[in-house]
Each structure stands twice: as C-alpha cells, then as structure tokens.
Image 1 (tube, helix red, strand yellow):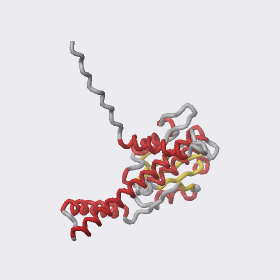
Image 2 (cartoon, one colour):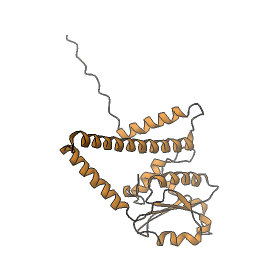
Image 3 (cartoon, rainbow, N blue to C red):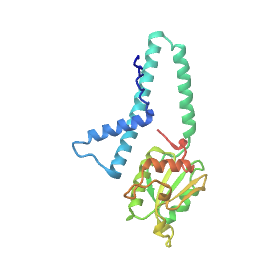
Length: 232
C-alpha cells in the first residue's frame, strides 16, 4: 500500500493587531528584564502604554516613508506619477477630513479631578460634541485607584473626550461606597450610561482587579466613547 502523503498543517494566522500587541509586550518585558519587569496591574498598564507608544512610532514612521516616496517621485520624474497622484489626493482628503473633524474641538488628554461646585459646568458648558466620562471614587478604594489609572491612559488616547473624577461623598454625602467605582457618561450634555458599580459589567481577576481593554470595550459598547473621540 502506498503511504498516504500528509499535507503539512498550515499554521493559523494570528490577528495582526493581537500579534503586534504580543510582540510589543515581549519587547517591553525584555527591555525591563534587568530592572525587574512589572507584574499585575502595574505590568498591564506598562504593557498597554508601551504598545500605544509603539503604535504611534509605527504610524509616524509610515507617514515619513510615504512622504519620502512622494518627494522622490516628484524629484525624479518632474511630477508625481498617476498612482502616486491618486494616493496623494486620497491622503490629502483624509487629512482635510481629520482637520475638519477636530476643528474647534478642545483637546484634553488627561484625567482631571473636580469639586462639587464644578460638576454642572463641567458638563453643561462643554461642547455638545464632547463626551464626558465622570468617575465617582474614594481614594482608599483599590478598584477606584485602578480605574483612575486606566482612565488616565484612555484620556491620552481619546483626547477629544473629557475624563473627570470626583470624590463620591463630595458629589453626594449619602453615596454608598458599595456602588463604587461608578462611571457617569455624558454625550451632547445628556447621560448616556449610568454605570453604578461598573465592575459588575467587567471580568474580574482573582484579586478583584480588571483589565483596561475590557473597560474600553464596555465604554465603546455603551457609546460613552466612540472612535471619533480618538486623536492620534
């Protein structure tokens, strides 16, 4: 009998974004190995920040390469070739749309703590296009501490959204700590998501902590954040 020839099993291709995240995670951990790589929530935050920086560097490198190719084509031929011309038109249109999208918009990029006397104006006096994410917290609550750390990171990414935090008992003296952490999310000056004890909607680890990607997905699902709030 002739032996059946088995075809090699093709390796299932990993999602490119997940592959980049894993590569960045390995690189970050290898770079910090000598000083001892952070683990737990601190390690998650470090990996996420490193991945965001790597993505920004990749985008910058790609744009420089595109611009260099355009300049080379223009100098060598006296004018840009048809394919390059079409690409440059699309590139310019994309940039114009981006500029139009952010025209007149405030860039935030950080988590700001406010007092009760600032609460109403922080929402009502804001541009109607601006999402406002309000975190009611207590400084000694571990989940609230982690939430504030994650919101600081998300604020750097979603720079057209406004991230605020207020001590819960300042907002309401009778606020029960069992409801923490609470996120109140506004868009167009209207409450779009009332996430009381938001951890009930997140996957918790054994230590009671949660993942930043899980939090981001929830905020996108609830329309508290949208992709248009991102500013590279």
